[in-house]
Image (cartoon, helix red, strand yellow):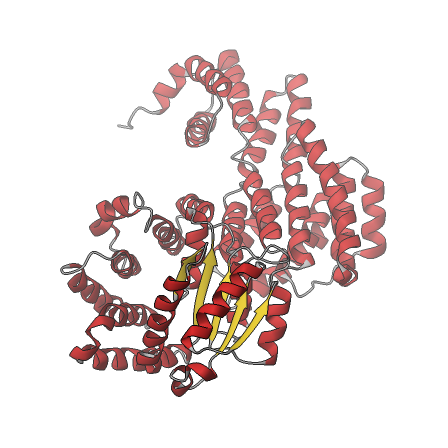
Length: 551
């Protein structure tokens, strides 16, 4: 696209993506009056993509809720990914809804304007020329951004800022300059730049840029009060949660990162990459319920998008199996029944499912094992699962799990060795994924049973009054499933009985304190709070003694 293209209204090519003919007609009549003639219409995202493959559009106007296949968020995401639109393209979103999650999703894609339905012809004729004027005037800056030449973008922005005739574009130019400084990792300069801006203006993007610059320099203490204010404001809280999640990941405080990223996802649920962060952090923090919910969210929001893949359905199945293995009740059975149906649906609904034959076989074997059909699981693995690692990290992790769950430690170790080599050579693998792989390797090496098996073992030991053995099994189960309150409460129960029968060792006292600390961090139901309170009361003498400072 050339700058001159945006000056000749008659030659402008416009794409309107909306499933309402009334919108088509209103925009057509409005554009006719402006002198815009070349307009294409698409009632769904599929046709819009076809049109974009055939020609380049100067203006793309897209409804957020294109209901027939994929929504506007995923359509625009795909258009950007495939290079059909960029910063030089005029991008306008349409929507009849203005709820916070939708607005956050739109802001993420950075359109040039957002028009609220029902549309008004006078407003359309007023707003479009304004947007076109910005694109024409700042075309060279947008071109530099498209080429990822951020130094040039800053140079051009500075030149334009010296031109008093462009005063009405100065705020936009300063925003571009600040974002370019952050892209170039010039955090100290970005801090000074945003600080100067905030002395004159009170724009939300300035505060977000300033906070980003300081967090990247680990200056959290300077902005704690500001962060609290920003998480209270509708226009900044979503982005602030996102920034805090990334900050805590870099600080390797994964529990805090997990809490912040969940808040961000709740405010903008459609972003698949952010949901993937939730999943990765849930795995690292042993939140099996969170893993299951995150994989379900990814599969739901990715439907018909460029992210849609049998892999997402596989991840839901895997997360369901993992969750079921932490439970020992009716809910476990229900999840396993759902998982069985999901495996059947995966094989039926996806043409590509045949490419995942071994992965699906592993899921079936894990399902057999979880439903106490060990011989069927062993038969499937013997016939169809090799010890050779494959390309996908998650496929290899699941392969190691089935060998581990079957007690075949040598085969599991072989796969995990390959996973460790894979993660060390993958420069794109994030810190969270690397830490999760390290954790999996360590836990598989030390703990040889699933949480469900450990809980069953503990129950049998407890019935035989072998409290030490029961406690050992429960401690391992608690390490694997710290957010399953039933397990740490069972630990307290056994510790209480051991204490009342003869006292606790130093290690058991430390375990009691650690278990209570864990439960205080977890969300407890009223009845759980009551039970924990009773055990704490019975353990009060030993707890008080354990907390006394040493001489």
